[in-house]
Image 1 (cartoon, rainbow over the protein chains, first blue to last red):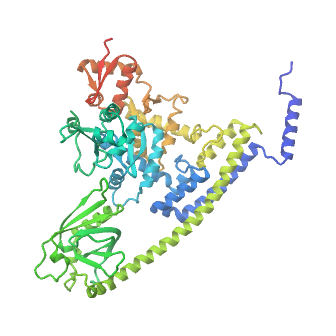
Image 2 (image 1 turned 30 degrees about the horizontal axis):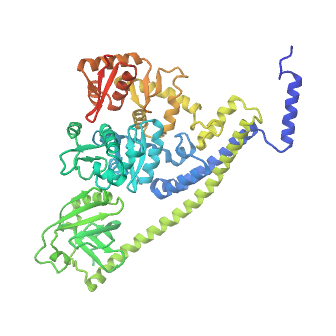
Length: 258
Length: 371
């Protein structure tokens, strides 16, 4: 019994189909892959030329970086996907953002015992700049945001929460849903929030407010000041960086929650 | 009017000074080797100079909620022979510069440098420096400053020209890149519709091309670069490199930790987060003694195969039983591990039924499960 698809008859049939296909002006996929290989070489040359003229611009100019990133996104290209990509290798954009990623992780880790893994983008920016030292390239907040987006893939819970016109950067896998986010946004103005304020502004019932606040306390994102005049205040260390002029030790952090 | 040796150092835009001068509008601060000069952005004739020698001490005030970053500069008391000016009559003895962007970091650094070097002492400005804002005084000072301003303006125009050329070249480059993207989509469609016979070799090559261009695989929608030679090599390198660090850390490291460790060691030609994830995914198929593992929380770790799950859970149970109860922080201290990974181990032991939790506002505490 003859196996189907094999034999002179089947081969001839395939050749006929291919010929018909080509006749109609279509190109086979394998031919296109060869074509792509050639075009890639050409593109690489163009990119090298571009790099030799403008590599410095990308290094020095945050605005130019934004334009570059947006153009890439528009055409469907991710220049930061891999260190092995042309963009990374020839323009050096990769190293810039991947190194920034390292610095962001380190800053967040160093402050986690104090703020529970939540930090304002402003504070993160300042600390990263300080850590980079005086001879390093300028880093904008847009740069940080793009670096953080890339860090997400590593599963450490990196995310950004919109708060007060800017962002809070989360670096721990604590689950924060809409309720938590909204309370954070409410607390942003003063750095703390009370149950009454939540009830008044958000029209929630006491239970819902307490549930959310308890979760924030448990995750180490909020500290309770039960001695406050009037009503207990829930402080978010991520939001009051200017009030604490020195770092709090883990022991002190533990003591501040009853 | 300004000394020939005086050198302009820094041109900082958009800061608002107040204190000695009472609160003024948005202006430009210039720092020279001898003086601090401020000039109103709109009214160029309104400008004030302060000799650096008048500064006793200065400090930064970090930005906060609704507040911009500031530098506070404390001044010596007014000298008796000083010419009339705002300083003499001010009730403040300090100036606060409020910065709109983060220029305060550079400014602080430069000011620190100049206050250390004290270059004004080498070449003192011969005339006493007028610090009034009278129209006469304003005009005289404006001359010197205009020269400095012009230099800066020229430099800025040149930079602008470079940028527009760069943008033009960038746009042209993007057109070519777009052609590549469209070609890759066409190929992907044909693969899907089976128009043409693609060998495995060609598939691998295609994936490598996509990786070079940063184009997501349109056929499989996988993240960039899964299953390429590059990641194969990387996986082997990581297998070698991570053995010792993993041993030191009890057999487990968070992926972000690995990322920092590897990239700091490399120094350049760094790995992207995706590169790392894709390489780690290949550990198993390459039969390397490491595994990428994802916890329920989403935390990803690299784990030594030799450190079995049972051992980890048993040791967690032992430690908790010995102490009666443990929080993630306490456990972390005991083992010398990060709090993140200690918590994951306790959660795992709980999942397997060996521990139970007490979740209160004081924290999450684990107890041996006696049920």
